[in-house]
View 1 (cartoon, rainbow, N blue to C red):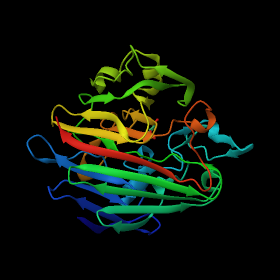
View 2: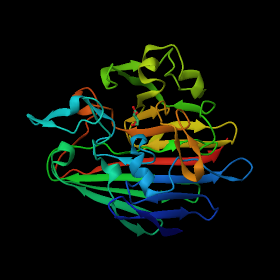
View 3: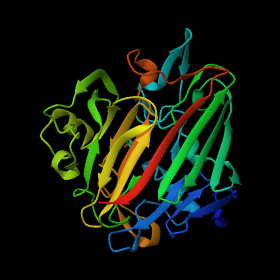
View 4: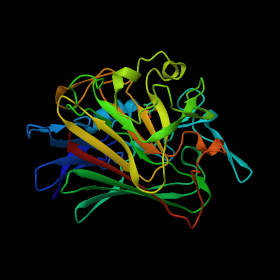
Length: 345
Ligand code: BGC
């Protein structure tokens, strides 16, 4: 069942709508047409009590003012970093908006997370769409994007992200939801265990863009083929961990097509989150620099109080010929799926 309610207005007066998706067991998710944001997901813990496990805010104004953390946002046109905010496509060099020192991060100064999208409800699915004009943040091509959210009867939230362009461009859409499976605002996520189906990750250079090396995880804090607590790895004495201030890296997920990429689990609540995706990479950001701030219902947020599991193309892929391509050509359809399936251990 889907219900809609007003979520106030943006600073310039545009109305924002919150959609509440609920299944017959009472589990729910909430999404906003502002930024196609996922602002909450409530699922039962092992005692049957619902816990909202997704970080978010109570007002549109806060989403605008505190957007640096990208809480729950649908990020685009190109998630993650593009080195020196520049790339060359078909012999032409494009300069993008630089919003993190010299780099372009999560779509630029005004990314997809800062627009009110068009919305519609199609059965049990909420659909957001927008047209990103040619030249927006420096990107070529008019890009039409569509994001759909569906909550299933078995407590899985399914996202489908799609795009079509009238000229050669790049696209890399992901959800930037932060998870705390003990409940948003329930302290840090150090005791959460994480398992990732990957034998390699992309190493960071000093500017936090990949240095081009796809390194083996074996014998490092990046080997999460067997579940390990986040706190075991995020302070490890390892140059790549120091570079990211914890986990802030992209893993190369094994296989292709829709497959399971990761499982996050919280021993205290018993809640598990299994992530499946068609995307080639998974950026895990352990909230190392998440600002200290007040979230929904006066919850305390801050560093490491949530972990983002961002299924996406590899960072800076457009400048790395060895990485899976993020180029979208006219006539092609970008289509990726991300499924957050909740359960109990
Ligand atoms: C990036 C981080 C960044 C964070 C918030 C994550 O996706 O990997 O480096 O600090 O988003 O902007």
